[in-house]
Length: 255
Image: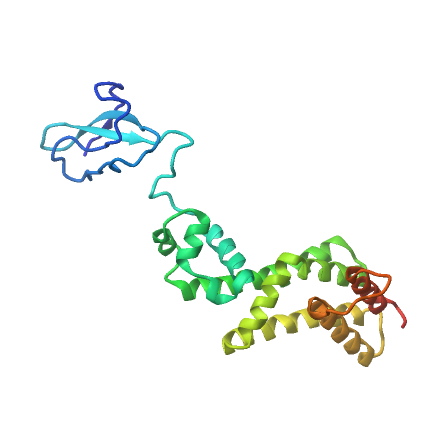
């Protein structure tokens, strides 16, 4: 094929037409049909001529969507949007809530686009765990190390970032998931070990007693994970104030 020559001008067909088709039996050019009577913004029509080797030219009519109109059905959704939708569903209802049809509806596309990025739901679930691990370990450690050289401040910021509302909801959902899935339990153990190693390194930089280091690491981690399960009142303080008070107590140079 020598190529596409055009545009050859607009006109000759009504601008309100919703039909786009190839005129003539040109090989290698696919027919596309209209969407019927479904209401949508009328497309702009582009007329061009296709020249083939050893045959006569054929006219080609192409429908171009107007700006602001419906998303073309073959427009692919960025992979990251599926990951974000999956993490949101996981935080809301655990792994059972991560369903392709539900995610597609939340994004506003058909589920067919999902399989352009993933082989199936198990691959998506594995990638959700990968993304969660990256966000709550590598990304956070890199960030806090860049923000401050002070170990106590690094612990404080790591706790704030790791157990922010968004990440903490995912964390809790994965902990529940791990109770029923040995592979997820192993992944969670690895991540918690990385978190504890970070705490040991930070507390160990200003505490000499290894028993005290381990005790503070355990208490700090238990406070971060368990604070959402505490239903008790704190007279004269909000729950947030009480948790912050406990955290600052653990960060003291001497207790």
